[in-house]
Length: 317
Image (cartoon, rainbow, N blue to C red):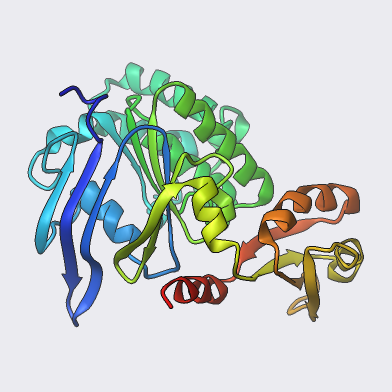
């Protein structure tokens, strides 16, 4: 069976625990084939454990993990066709973005000249092929750091990308750009597994969703099925903006909005607009139009972790 016909990633009855009786995954069985697969779950659900097992950074206590029909913990040849973007930053901050990617390209076996060409190629994919690539990483915004991490994962044109919370902390523009980048890569035949604790971050372009909760696979399927399952539960959205009261005026008349609350600014620049919706599907479709119409600067949008935790508890009742 060829790589295209077989699942890229297979987990069979996998259990992984850490010191202190902390369970990462618990009797976890799943398969991942082509396209884009979203791993969705609250913080601590087991998403990062899944990706670390798939990239061979750790091994299971029980069960079988296979990537390209190989054991990633024992067979390093897996990494010839795999790219990985970790959740945590691990930069030499004094380096420029270009230098960082180049040094990783050399570590992957590229010559000096080949590494320069490959760095130019991957930086172009993430739209950092300009003067920003020559700035020290310590000056980068969170969104730019996320782009650099994705760029290094693309070195060597891998057929499988594993991305751990690639949208975390990114501004709306960067999130939209990364989403388009992932869609373009899928069209080119690249398979992608990415984790997120916010469903709407991945539902616009993911082919399959796997819901992980307390180390177990709670549900899986096409986006429309998972959305119908989750959107019966209310969502609370946090919007960080310099004009929360002005922005609230644009949301107050929307039927999808149940309530609004404003938290006084903790500094001189930003406040928080909290939105409770009982119809998340409709709200998230209306959200981009409202933001464009308001012309209010928005620093961050996120679904609160505690609320997503409540969603998963709701599904397990």
